[in-house]
Image (cartoon, rainbow, N blue to C red; front, top):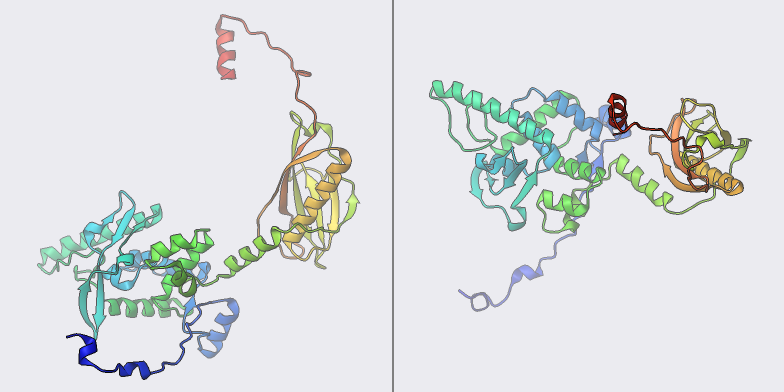
Length: 387
């Protein structure tokens, strides 16, 4: 029946729904973990583990029957209904892929199988580690199949992930099982669905584009992925901040403690490679040294009151530029060396690596010709050594 002929007015248009704010995922930082331990309160409805906490959970469930399932949730980010419905034939460990082509929907604990949305049908690439973990899980289930079949108790479900007797998994049971494992591990609580946030965040932390994350999660647009499933891990936020500050050249003041000298013996074919190391004192000041090798004596030394390792590296680069300009040398490459911010009073930390050009043309001076006999065993050995 045509709607316009059956109803003269759509009364649902008069209903004004309140605005709903999408909950922002929060990371379990040490401060939030301490608050949770003290009060038992979660900072928000959607919480995400850090990489260290995620690794601790995987170590805890290493011997669990469904370890390969938890591993897949974390590293691939599928939905629970997709994994419960995953057919055996849609997993190819030799070619390193699995295909999401089915899902199970739960309504009042009753299960209904249906095809996922068009954008949710996708093929997920497997890493070598994921393929190995899934292979171990499959071998474990094949062994259980032999044991349960002998007792005529094996249930043929054609599912990749099953119970010990081959029976298919119920999505709600998987969620409750995961919740119990988290409680036993002592880690701060996260929901099973929150593992999709973790998977997306870890993928971004590895440098993957948001489009890659979107396709892996099976979203229709990257906006949904960006708004919903990409929690900002502390490591990701720090990398973003450092990348923003590093693209703008800044002058970095420093005091010369020992003038930088680059002796001629450092140059091979007109080029030399040197490194900038630093140590941070308890007052926050950085002492930066340039060496040919990290165990050599310093070729020069400066001191700077940079507020961060990024700024200390900038001071080292600025110093090298100034000195090479005075000496008539040219910097071919100045690469910052990434690393964690050192604590005051700790050992030397690498800051940067420089490739210096002396400007001299490589010639034949200093080369000594080596006569080679056209025949004989000695000539054969020399030819092999040259090769």
